[in-house]
Image (cartoon, rainbow, N blue to C red; front, side, top):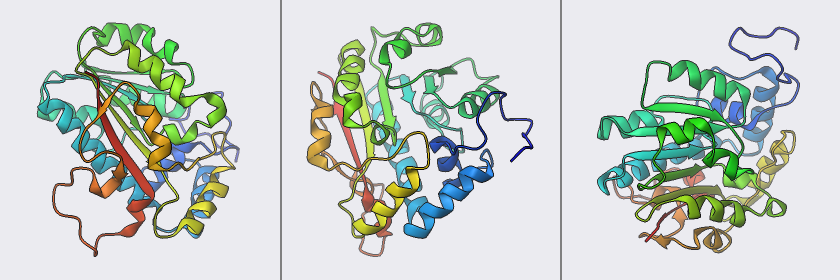
Length: 270
């Protein structure tokens, strides 16, 4: 691929798929390249229900944001935010609580560039180019310091991002660094891929597809996620499949089972 779209920042490698652009494709977005779509097609061939997981992740994110707003939280730190699509954190939070402040963080240049364009006229939301693997760079980023008051409760959103951290990156330590910077009354939201759904073999095919990207996907169980919540009190119903985290309506057997391949949990810092 030699043609570079006008929205694509200079310097990005158009030959390597990006997880944020693949995710954008799954959610029906247009800010992705053919290399991303090819990786997505491989994953979809192994597991056609992937878009349902993306939609379920977004639904949990919306419910968790509302949970935070209902607790009086008016600040949000969304790490691994990806490419903005309809119903992003700032739209949900600011609709529920006008003036709520949202700090997005991503390490994908396309996600950062497009977020800046989307947020240009929003004084209460911003994007920083930083990496979850370097939490200090996020906490000390000038935009974070400008927009968020770390002495007041914050909702830390880690939606569909921790599963890109291998154990070698010490994700529990990364999360602990972020936790220690949060004021009492803060909440943390984690969603994560898991093999413990109805079709684990298909999910392994998805893992193989993500090996093509710069950030391979890992699956973890609910028990393996529990250490990430050290220092937080898990709120009911605990770490559960995405559709079962405080659903807006009862979950039935007719609901798509693909979403059971994702887990969600929310912790409260006392």
